[in-house]
Image 1 (spheres, one colour):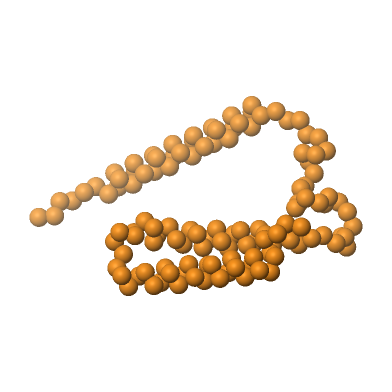
Image 2: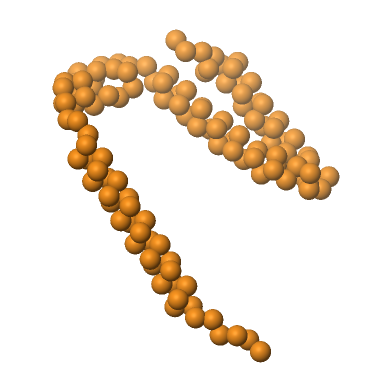
Length: 124
């Protein structure tokens, strides 16, 4: 015999939890806004973008190396994140899965070698 459970009671608890979270987060934002000091100056109000003055001529040349390094960092950071599941399940992996991870590491190493060879990692 299947017992009937009151699902609405479970949803009421979830709704109360969300209301409490909303109240606490709103209270923290209001308290932080009330207690924070406001000392605006020229440096705080200016927009900072990539180490150069934002209020210059639009045709000024600037080095895109910053963007290149940032993109390379994101790419390698994401590739390292893909390694976490393999490390977590390393004891439970079948022998068929080892060539896949070795191939992945080979591609990662070749990409790093290519970038190193083309001096993409050297800050100028």
